Image (cartoon, rainbow, N blue to C red; front, side, top):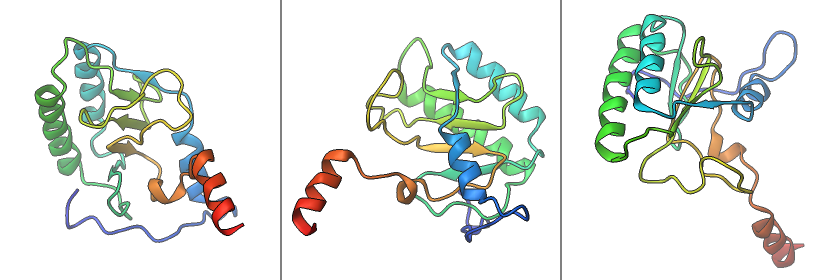
Length: 160
């Protein structure tokens, strides 16, 4: 998001558990949608109140940040992403922002209105979010996602 946020190096916690595993486990966890715009407004207020809470701001596809964003960066991000979502997701509902807990979030997925695919419901290969706010240090999601099964079979036929 900002040139002052440095790309992350691989991290391992003191317990020996991988920080990457923790992030991926949280990423694949249970989330609730901010279905209506007023739900999103309420989520933004909770996040603004915790702007200095150690949030990593990750634009999926860019190098993951190594350090949490400043409170000022979090507030600016919320302002800018809210404007983008309202401008580009021209619906009477939101439904493209998901939090692990809307009342006390630690992980928020924000889907790009121009790359939705099958965000809700079930899909074997749902699109990655466009942006993530997380209290866990992110990993490079595109590199961490397994290739779709059809692509793996193709690759194995080609080189297997």
